[in-house]
Amino acid sequence: MKNTFLQFDRWATSLALAIACAMLVIASALGVFQIVTRFVLEQPAEWSEILIRVSLIWMVFMGIPMAFRQGAMVSVDVLYRWSPPRIRRVLDWMVCLAALALVLVIVWYGWDYAKRGGVQSMAGLESISMFWAYLAMPVGGLFCIVGIIANLLDPKRNELETAQ
Image 1 (spheres, helix red, strand yellow):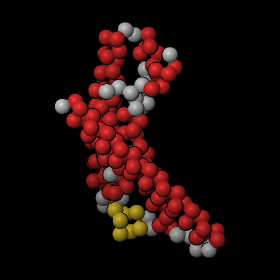
Image 2 (cartoon, helix red, strand yellow; image 1 turned 135 degrees about the vertical axis):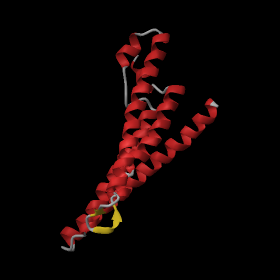
Image 3 (cartoon, helix red, strand yellow; image 1 turned 60 degrees about the horizontal axis):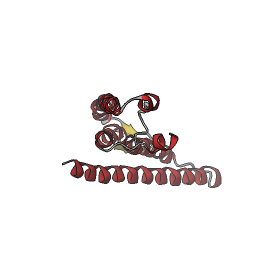
Image 4 (cartoon, one colour; image 1 turned 90 degrees about the vertical axis):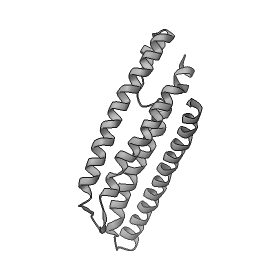
């Protein structure tokens, strides 16, 4: 069961990271496009700015699961170093539960926000609903939940181990 979940985590975290990287590429390409159209051609494309923002939002929310998986989001290094192994496991559980609580709030309200934003349209792209931009919060949050649980099952503390 544990190995199956960790295998699923590797797949899910890799997918989230690939999406985050793709969003960075899209944002960069659109930024170059916007510069060329605005300053070289003197015909700015209004739609590119909103797509840059949306792709950056998706990039951040899809990149966060990897940070959770690596144990880099919530860190209690000093307590962890000074604690015996039993207390370290308690700290792992406390951090996991706190992070899950926060991410569940983000998923819950992110979904509500996305549904409510569905009546809005993107500036410059009136045919596309803001639902797709706001959907980054709950989707990224779901990927984060997988990373948080996987980090509890198989902790990654590379930066902590090299500092000792």
